[in-house]
Image (tube, rainbow, N blue to C red):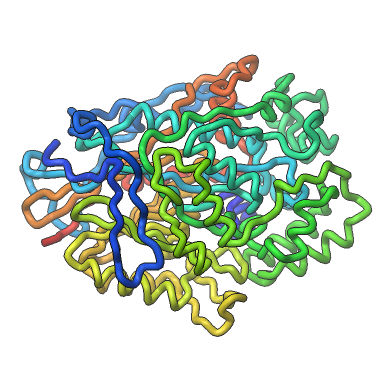
Length: 573
């Protein structure tokens, strides 16, 4: 249940611990033809009209607009630090799985070029059931910058639209794929924001009372940053600024141009479970979500007890939360009820993706199809290029808890899909990484079905020599690991600093090896902020700076240099 990434399990309570975690171009730049796997419950529909052939040609590679050129860096010292432009991160060659042979840059041809978004966590900060109150037990259990997730994601969309091509090959992006936690609280309105942000359109971040903010940032509690108040809250004590007009600006409509390439969607635990942990639709939680009572504080000892239980998976159904809400009923704030906060079932989530309003650059359903709608499944395969397929998994356990797993039906489908496409390369996408797949809570819809963990998934993928990479998120951390015959690539979130997405380019080196180029990107917002600039762009810049300064933040999420901009070499036919 990722509110914040973990420092050390032994000494630090935080959000992840508790609430989470040039050449011949064959890239399918907008083609995205159906794979047609016989055992697949869904294959991607056509993405729409073919792109301009001239635009689909590779251009000279350039690192402009990526972290190869520049990365946000702090200025000065003290509590609250401003950001400016810093030196870029170099590209490092990793040859644990195969020798990086000389001359490959002159031989290689491109197989794929795309972008991964992950852990956007688009957040309704006025929602009646958010877990801000855990902050009494740990400073990192709440993000002061959460009200700016919408300007932040639009700025990331703008970055992709400007960069347009892979920096290693110059090949145009074929698509963008999200790897889950697209929203934060499984609320209908958050799903609509996500679909609009990527497809294009206007979004209204304001829920509840249209004339008054009703979240914790005007509660009068020193526990939270009050940007428009003289209150000496605990964040201002650390140097957080007073910004008059901030809450009104954060509630203004946000406009997104939408991605200028097709995009696909993958499911995460926050897209189904309340707070990333608890079954929401059809439970007591659903009533709270659309109700008019909001809890803002619980004592520190109670907060720590609840978080420790969640980290251990002691309460996957949320019984402790239900009891806690009842016990604190009289202390709740009255807010404006909003039916747009209702949690969605998996079928409703798929139906929203199939809504023509959100087609954007396609494909229709963004990977999901009527077959998914009929079956309630959230996994599918799609064609990346003539020689590469993509497989999007659903690693969320509907039974509860923030860790993931696969049910036997999906596990078997994955095995059969890879076997059916043994003559093509495969890239696997999921929300959870292998090390966060240990959840054996039964699926209420299939109580007798076995759940399969990360080690089993690694073993299955290792049995198929066409697998090139497993790309995921959830941990909010950059981490790349060799897995015998393929690479596992985890990418940091776009909610916790350093707020990144990842470009991935795949090349055939024509010497018995394949290279995967990974390049991180930040949003298009300027590094420098102006507290008086409350425009959409100004808020996106502030989103990054506030995240950098967030109390309790894990400063290691960028990973090591070998987890960032890389060339990952592996042996292939």
